[in-house]
Image (cartoon, rainbow, N blue to C red; front, side, top):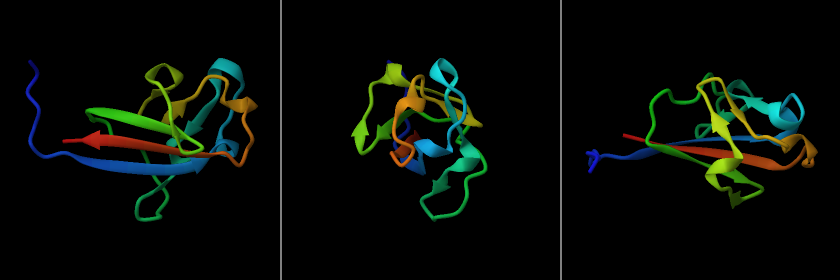
Length: 94
């Protein structure tokens, strides 16, 4: 069984689909296109986290709909969504 630290917190980032670039499998939104909980422009996503949740238009997505790095989140096929669709990424960190 993995060791889970007793302290957990989250970091949330908000943007819209319109901030993304690419098409199909390469559609991605840069971390710098997001704002954080304080309303400030994000510089990067957390490098270490327990897991993350992706919400598209307020609906949590399954884990197979995205991949994330410190610089971007890739959402294959996201380019077909309306540009105003809100995106929230929540990282749970220890």
